[in-house]
Length: 260
Ligand code: NDP
Image (cartoon, rainbow, N blue to C red; front, side, top):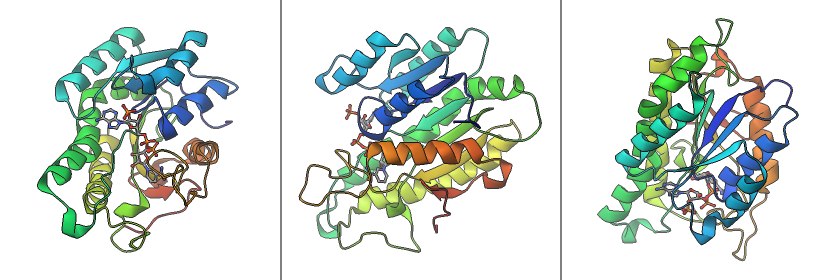
């Protein structure tokens, strides 16, 4: 990835799906990051086995216990990452962890709405706050005045399902709590991009495509069109090329602008 050189990256929800894909792709780069912090809410659990195996072979993967719906867990993770980084900052924060509750509008519940919002929207907001000092440090330590993902960036994993203008796959699933949480995440990303620009931090929100993961529905009767590899490769290519012009943008895995 010619245009993307990060010394450190943190991916939330890194034990499976798109998050694990990011970890694998960072490892395969010609110049892999010195630190790949892999956030995982249950590092000893069955679902973290593949990540554990990978970490046992690659000392630059550091598994960080991280439950993004728990503010104390986020604070503890920021402290651990800061300790590991010593004096240097964090270049890239990928807020990837997310949940969806398959529900029609008729069956939607307050519990779903709150749980999904807490994970998908409040989590990335708290992550941004907690990791801001480390991201600022990375930006200060990089030469040049422009914004880039190699310098310091927050990437929020949103979804086309959060677009209000273009109600993506409504017939496939209403998933109201999920759509609302991602629409709100898009607004959060815009706010972060404005507030953090002055600190040298680039913020964008991504639609990864419809991807073959547990959430994407790879195991169901309909196979999503994209593999994790294709999606992550596409997003890394986009990340390698964006600058201040794209700050606050809602882009898909190919770099196309998604309607709000
Ligand atoms: P998966 O369901 O395959 O993986 C979700 C990941 O998030 C898991 O690692 C899971 O950990 C983690 N996670 C969930 N809740 C929490 C939490 N509270 N704290 C910490 N980690 C948590 O999803 P995908 O890989 O498909 O999705 C990744 C992101 O991409 C999500 O934000 C999703 O909304 C978005 N997206 C995905 C699309 C797709 O087609 N797949 C389409 C559009 C957007 P655990 O194993 O412990 O559950």
